[in-house]
Image (cartoon, rainbow, N blue to C red):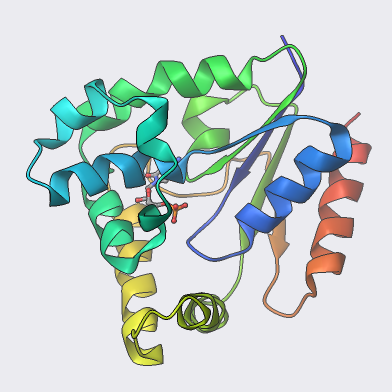
Length: 201
Ligand code: C5P
């Protein structure tokens, strides 16, 4: 069993940046599990039935840059409430988490459901306003026309759906280290995460 680091938290809290930095620091593999749900969500926008899309998911479905659009994000959080969709994606994620060389997985239910025995669990969060502003800047840099108000409404809708669903709702694991990045620089957040991990080794 390898060294597994579980990173959970709401949309645009900084999980992706932190996960990449942590994986690079330790030489571990990284899986952004949101991409699995985004790939399934994207298929449903093309008319594919969600459970079928989840059962037939292949790696190439996951590297489409269009998966980062707000439409796909909402579609992802809608398919993510379906228990059969989640069940279809469990084995792949657990196998990734058990890699001999060490693994960082980020998502919503990694510390609670996918890898409950992870060596270190981080719960990364920030206020909805701060997260929406970060996502807005990211999207506008890519030429997306969404307004600040739309992005904030999207973030809040996704938070509610992710936290209130019955199956694997977003919440910190009992043994997670909380990192609130609302008023932290990226460098400070990385330093805090690395210190929390070092403390567990
Ligand atoms: O992290 P990202 O924003 O890419 O995730 C897209 C959506 O996928 C989330 O809003 C959530 O509904 C779902 N998701 C999930 N469980 C995970 C990762 C993502 O339910 N482990």
